[in-house]
Image (cartoon, rainbow, N blue to C red):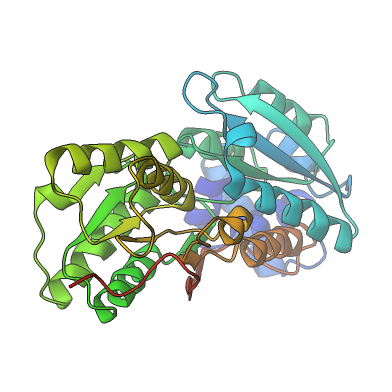
Length: 342
């Protein structure tokens, strides 16, 4: 039995239960009586951390970068999250909060719990490529506030994780639609990891658009990548060796597109004269490639600002709970796509 169970049984929010524990005057007598009755009925004994959560503020947000060093070095290798990290820190500062950045390995997240229990932070934001369902559940069961920047690794329909959500399907659909409008009929895809929600949704958006435009789809056009430059490079090598290179390629992120363009250059294929390439994310480096990469812009700064504002609103009791918000992506036309050769 935890604070979330009590809230559900009492028909109130977790924040209301917390206010009852802290003897807040903002709770009506009727609601307070109802919550206390449920606690007594189920013999609920709140832990000291949950009871003290709102009693003292550190005015500090914990930013936890959780890596799987045996698999992928998120912080050092992925350009996507650098902007998000900077935006979180900047927005916390704008709202009068410090940011305590901690880099952890998924195999040992004990330092995260220590920051909460020692009252070093008021709430936490996690950036990670690992599945965080169990971790988030443990933190919330202890009565603490936590949210994640990207729920890509959370299984759809699983535990609700407060996080911004990118409209990946629509973004991928727009990318294919743009290529189709240019006249491309043979459009390949380098997918991301398909056990990753973003990777799966972008693949599904590709299939939906191909079907809507009545374009042929075969396994020869689909190469399963992993969101890395190596994946994009390998896809082009495979298509060239098999003689199945499409006239246009949708890459599930910009890093993949960079790898694909590198391989094409190595084989003396011209982008976009011989083949068009479109990415997804709009990394800063994408505009400085040659040719500059046409891509789908993901509003990482807006996502980070929204998440920080939501978290602080909950911490300052202006809002009852964190909620999931969806963000649209935008086509950024640069120089890597053109009409196909006849």
